Length: 512
Image (tube, rainbow, N blue to C red; front, top):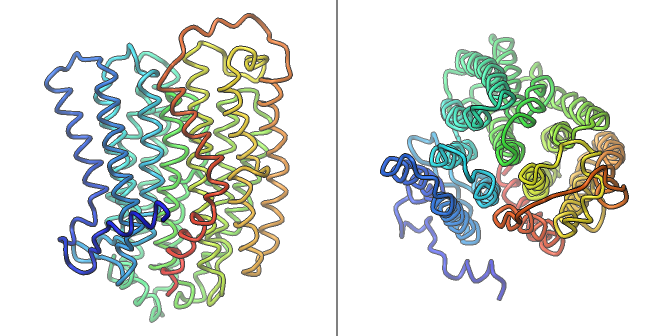
């Protein structure tokens, strides 16, 4: 019996009413309560720097939330018998929300384990861990949003802790400057999103996705207002996913932030942006009923091509490994946008291509988080950030460098790693839905990405050291998190059929 089947056998079907429906939000509650517990611990002993206690509680909360999410997914909660709606339909729990929550909680668990070493000796550790948990709570709510009001509130719940986390190193000028830039651009994008939501409300008279879709189907006089609102909503999501034209905050924020925070933002936060974008555009602005004057698919096609191309070309010109990863994350946002850019009204493969995009974000959550946590380990050792600084690093830390090589090859999309299969299914499903040229552009960008990802591998394994390395102690938490991400990236190969099948199944329900 497989692990999923075992979980399913133990699961209680919420659809049958054996548990109160609000328990469907248990993964979100666990994350939020863990954040409050961390604040309580910090209040009792404000001067505590007990990294083991704080990291342990944080990781325990994230793993508990992940376990409940996996249980619900296996049991068919919100899937068998239909989605579960709460709070006057403002929130929905279904397979898609649970799938993305699994991504967020997995990333949080790896980041909190790694932070055990990274934060040792720093002040305000309790606040750090609680902010990570609160931000993750907001991300999980974003995935469950069924109203534009919930979208706005949950996005801010996720974004506000993120601004503080980027500027966590208060005595580091780069961290503070990155936090300020991130906050200012975030405030601008929030204003754009809010204005867009208000225009949609003015045109449709509702904020609930299904009601917005119904009103748009009969829209006649206010198509222009609704169209401008949809465009501005897309702009708000472009910020959260670091897509063009709101991408330029990402390299600054990721470079200045503590490396675990960069891992958290570039993986979990980006996935949260896509989760809410997928649901809003599929359910609130469905292609089948949206007026002809509102062609958001064309906007996403342009956005996907420009984002992946600009991100990859910019990454290829970097000398700083952290900035290279930041720009490459913009490129991967372009790949994920294919999930929306390759949709068509009545397309037979809509669920498959959207599911493939979700699966890519799932694999990306492990390989990209692992890559940034490797950089956190390198920063912990005091090694520099450029490619040249990485020269010969494998002579001192071969196991960690093997893990980093796995991340680089997987991000580039080389077989047999998880990144190859996620890109393969994404491009294949885009072709199946009639958008072969999107797949061609994506494949060409993947070839380009191999150039700069392989530079890291060459520096670590084939170049002579520029100086002498004194790596010092082995950071247990960082090592554990990096190895966990590497093993997951490799094991996602045999495990990919269940991942892609689950993603495409839950995505298909959005088009039912």
